[in-house]
Amino acid sequence: MIRRNRILKTSSAIRAIVAETILTPSDFIAPLFIVEGENVKEEISSMPGYFRHSLDLTVKEVKELWSMGIKCVLLFIKCPDHLKDNTGKSATDPNGLMQRAIKAVKDAVPEIVVMTDVALDPYSSYGHDGIVENGEIVNDATTEVLAQMSLTHAQAGADFVAPSDKMDGRTAAIRSILEQHSFPKVGIMAYSAKYASCFYGPFRDALDSAPGFGDKKTYQLDFANAKQALKETLMDVDEGADIVMVKPALAYLDVIRTIKDSVNIPVSAYHVSGEYAMIKAAAKMGWLDENKAIIESLTSIKRAGADLIATYFAKDAVRLL
Image (cartoon, rainbow, N blue to C red; front, side, top):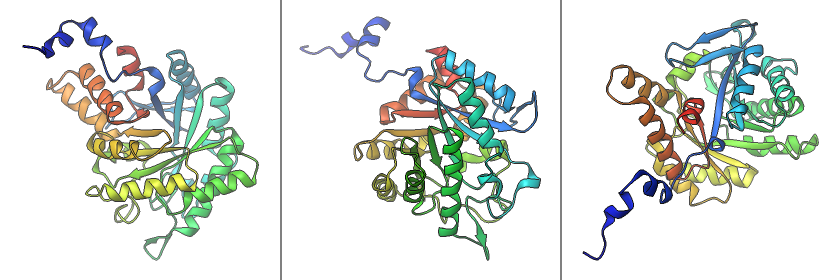
């Protein structure tokens, strides 16, 4: 034999020095769920080991994440039912929970990168990402609210706003309002290739944001389509996105690779709640090794082309690494 492929597999040291894909703590975005109250820590039943925290405990969590080398958090809030409506009023409140959370996190750990969810579903009495008129999720009126929402996040100190709504034109509208109000340094991480997926179920439990009627297929992507995802991603890049996202991750590795090969800005991927829950459930049944599944899954997402990975396993992964 001239070539023996097994030479590069001989030992753990050799495998390490020739590894093509290496995970580091800087790869991870840690999603955080925030609720009103004090000293509140609520486990999410469909996401074992993951919690909703009140603002005081969120600050402690962020300090721990920073100490572990995790450089970025993505904030979500659970809006109380009595504040939900069909206009997004709570979403644009300068004293709302999200806005207070941004300030608290940046005050506690100024260096950490704070990204914020921009969508109306947590605030909507209908559970949809946009304003509802006559049973339809209307686009342009929603985009105006999303832009205002993003502005309040920037004013509170966010480093990036992350529109997850999938309304047409929202990236351009957000970039425009940020520029108009002298926030040229606030970035946009657009959920550009966000699919209408069954893997979001546990997340909707976490924020009580399931749609009250119908589904989200009129604005999120059909999971059968890849070219459409690329088209909409390129549109977001043209509209001023600084980072683009593919969501979910594991079932869309091909889309991550296609987009990575087609854009010249960072690509993120969201290892979503259903993907987290599947690993947890299978591990609980003894069907797979949870720790190995975490690292293999996250490595596959990075190998596919993701520069950043939003994952509920961020802390676990850093400990394992």
